[in-house]
Amino acid sequence: MEPILEVKDLKKHFPEVKAVDGISFSIEPGICFGLLGPNGAGKTTAIEVIEGILRPTAGEIFYKGGRRGSTFKNEVGIQFQNTELPQFLTVKETLLTFRNLYDRAADMDYLITTCRLEEILTRDNRKISGGQKQRLLLAMALANDPELIFLDEPTTGLDPQARRHLWEIVRQIKSQKKTIVLTTHYMEEAEILCDRIGIIDNGRIIAMGSPRGLLEEHCAGATITINLDLDDGLLKSFPCQWFRKEGRIEIQTQAVNECLRRLVTLGIDLSTMNVRMQNLEDLFLKLTGHELRA
Image (cartoon, rainbow, N blue to C red):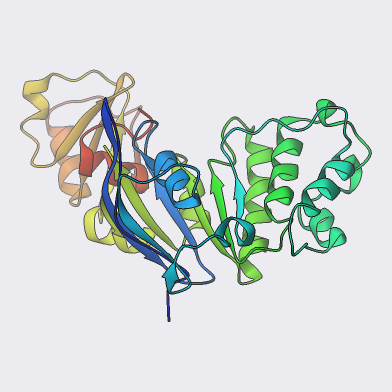
């Protein structure tokens, strides 16, 4: 199947930093592709170059098999990381205004229903909550009925309930065979929504694949967490990776039983211990050596 979006050796350099330093990937139609990384990793800069907001230093961008052309911005949907809504307009007036900016407009009822805006249509933009604002911004990104949609950290700053509501909307949009490019630093979000992910750090993609495939390849074991400050010499005797993290010790191992026997033999208090399967945050930590949420 021909990719709907293909990026080849994309670079964006500023005088003080190489924000994007040669990334390449392709996205098949109808999937959710996640670009993951900590703040400052280069994911937002990469997306803004692909969207046409910033000029690339080097590299090529292809859309539907051809070079990205002048119609690209009119055909794709974009939800920016930070957007100020027009003041003194209602939610409905804002949505109507944005629909009129495009040659092709999505059905108004579809936008309202999909993004769950029914109860706030007559409300002034200045009087809606953070979660309601994000749902309106998502509806604005869908205003031209795009096949390809960019969502740049759409749930940052939302409470858990509002975040999960937005996840449900994104899954509904994906079920309509639309293609989504999502940037996030929430690992649970990526595991729930994304079919494929690229992990970016220091402007480079360091791993790419399906969330489950990457975990099976790099993090097949479990993480043992102990809320104690253990001695480095003691920890170095373990034949596995370990990290200090926010006042606790995390041990990553594929031999859980052996590791637990070792801890018991050493007389370590295990009353605060937690054992869980490794996740995408563990994967990032293993590949880069530092926490994902830098």
